[in-house]
Image 1 (tube, each protein chain N blue to C red):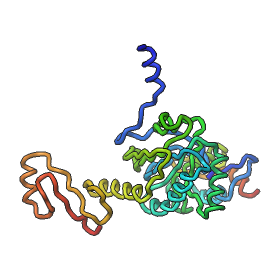
Image 2 (image 1 turned 180 degrees about the vertical axis):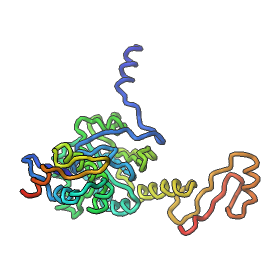
Image 3 (image 1 turned 90 degrees about the vertical axis):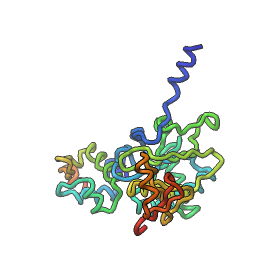
Length: 224
Length: 73
């Protein structure tokens, strides 16, 4: 029995975790062989979809292509992935452009051997053993995994939320702040709570912040 | 941005890249000059180095004689 458990554990790849270096890979894509390290210096949204030529995925790809220019303004690239061949990806991309008028401007990984999908935990065997779920991995310019979103096969992702997530993470990095629920650029941000009693006492006296209590203070970002 | 076709010819994008590196340049410099994302430039340079069309010299890339031949075809 112990041996069986051990064998099962060996088969399960360790899931990636927020705050750790993103698992490196080299993959065949619709734009040639690409290594994850090629993206160093820019942010990357690596996302998976179940299969080419399926309706929910098609709506998502149109959505991703539509936000791509805004992401690039934020120094953020996009790269898709599914367990399909590069020829399938090319045919689907051409079909989306021809039938739906949307050019797909980002590379799509042909992960036929499931190597990248396994490294990133994109396959949910409870849903499907042969398709990747709708996963989103936000990798920053230093190649650290900063956020993950997992959606089931049935449910298309929200592009506004993905944009908002990048904006929030970059705001955190630039200003050393956190962002509250439903935050959007221009809203007040959260000042990290004080770590000591002395800092807490100073915090409540600080008139620059809008504080409900010592641990819960917000502020405007100058010029933002 | 795969650069080298199976028949040995190169794409128009690859030609533009080769023309841009008659003098050695870094990937960042090439990216800015061509208006292409840095990841595509890095990927293309790797492919063209493997094909002998480009060589790396102290973190900069420059066209080889083989690469110059491809531009004349």
